[in-house]
Length: 131
Image (cartoon, rainbow, N blue to C red; front, side):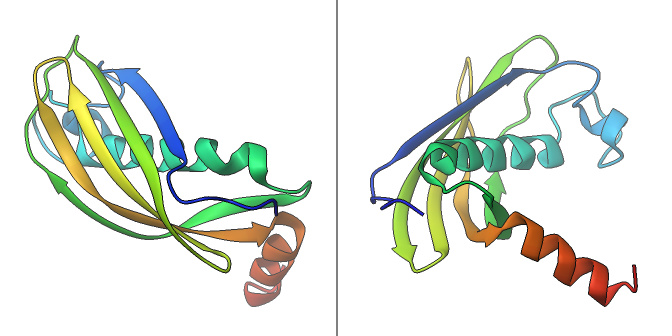
């Protein structure tokens, strides 16, 4: 793993459509951008920001997320997440994340990811499940 430095920025965006609203993903009844979809976008921004700095065979997995979903966003709006790496503790990476729509801030929080060796991670999981 190359040196990951505090301050590294990330970004991910999507459009709110029928596939990522609460009524479609099972998290609610309304056609508004779902909390699970916002969380996935937050994870994507963080994951992709550090990917170029990882060694071959390494990846990251989400291990903690503390998020506030602040505002509903309707179908047809663009939403995006900005992330910033705010702490590095050995293999644990901590990010500040902010989600926005074209109108307002819709979410914010802290996300932690752990740097892993992909093959070893899968081997350990398979051993736990007897595969």
